[in-house]
Image 1: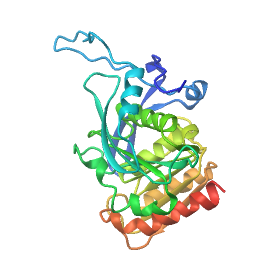
Image 2: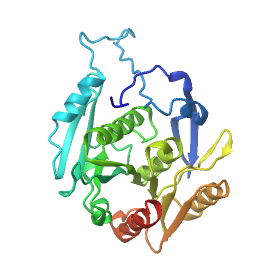
Image 3: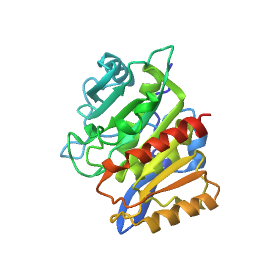
Image 4: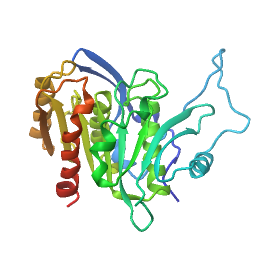
Amino acid sequence: MPLFFNIINFEGALLNISFNKINLKFNTMKYSKNIFKIFIGLFLIFNFNACSDSGDPVIPDTPRTADDVREDFISLNISSGTSDHVLESTIDNVFWSFRTIVPEVASDSNKRPLIIRLHGGAQNVSENSHTSTSCLVEPGFEGMDAIIISPNSKGSLWFDQANQVQVLALVDLAKTYLPVDINKVVIMGYSDGGNGAWFYSQYYPDLFSAGIPMASSYDTETGNGVEAIDIPLYVIHGSDDELFPIETTEEFVNESIAAGSDIQFITADGLTHYNSCDYVSYLQNAATWLTTTVWN
């Protein structure tokens, strides 16, 4: 029985934390590491209560269940090649949009690495944000024959509660129903997606074997100070990034390394924040790092 959607009421374990990064304030909810480890065998799916205009809870006549989501996922036409999907969550009329890229060689006898790609510009509401995979992610990982899943943020930061539910669910569904090597799962992203890659590496290390944040600016400090991240990271940053200055990102990286994190910090000389397609060779080097260092 897959672990996906073991529903528990766990709102008391959420912490409200404000992140101040490069004059951007991210309001998000982070988990206590100690509490999370107690429930590491479960994916933490939150109970959302839809409300009517009067403030009273709206209870559907036939609420959707985890089994409904699983059955709908199985019925999707996820075959080799690139395809885009919409999947209704356990909340009626709340849909997840995501792209899958599956290599022809993937099979039950040839399970492939899984890359969860988080797009940039997470707060920009666009129904096509998750489809922007051709110029960076696809050529960056083309030599790995990996399965790539690229979800849509729906205009919310990747730290936000709804996106945590989406990302965790898609990881578990992919591990359960697609030919995925569960020991080779990577979280990566660019800009806002890079900050998301940091977040999931820090708070969900048991789900991923590595993280690849690109063009990001993420402070790992919590109420307990800076703590080591339990999985290795390959952090790529443009020397001329005008949105997230490299000096600030490098300082965050060095603080995390000092705390015990295993981080490779790679400077992309001459690259700015807004030419993400020019980072392909750096992502290809990250793919080599995965195969020769992380998974060797």
